[in-house]
Length: 267
Image 1: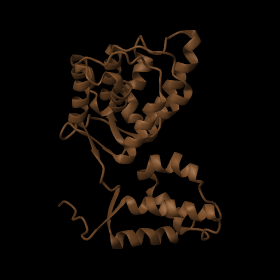
Image 2: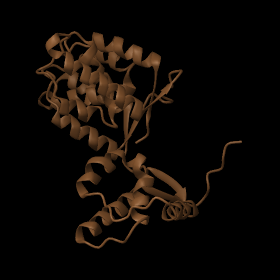
Image 3: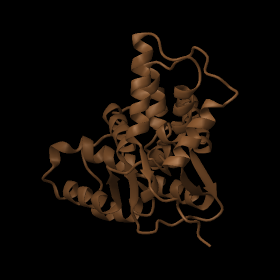
Image 4: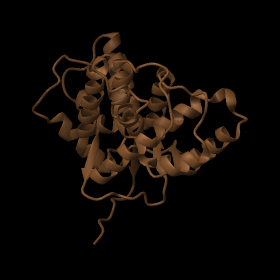
């Protein structure tokens, strides 16, 4: 997963858009739900998270909810700093389309299945989608997927059909894209550099749960870390350790494209 870019102007516009979206809470979000959305996938949930604290129908701005509002704002700020690049000027999408790899989409989809705090009796109208969601297309995949997933019971409605078509036009799933492209010598050199790293793993191994919960959702960021785990420290001894190595090697194998030619630098 690549870090998503955002400019300060984009974030200001996002706050204004969030104030105009007609939607209602079915209940207050839990901190666990906020934590899920303010993960490495925050870019795709940013409009929804902003709506929670900027819209009058979001988390009420009362003394009773002050702590929750502060929690959401703090988590947004921390996650944006960790998982997004701030730019001085807005970087436009080259073809108006947002691309997601299969691991990224799977994680977002699983988050959507677990959050339940928004009324989904009515999917946004086409005019609202064009006016509010289209200008914030980089940051609203989670919000739109929420309506699409929770609105499965109204598949025949014109609003559902329009939303599904709209998302198909502006988001593309790259199922066969590899996370890393390099030549065989480049890959060998990278593995050798990991083997020669002065910081050793010693006898530590991640658990299967840690791989599933931390490494896989952040696979692009953890690629070299996986190689470091594999190539430093003692060989696996227990059945659990051997299973961990098997999973890690599979992640590297399935997400590495070995090319025959070195990319020629532009001028």
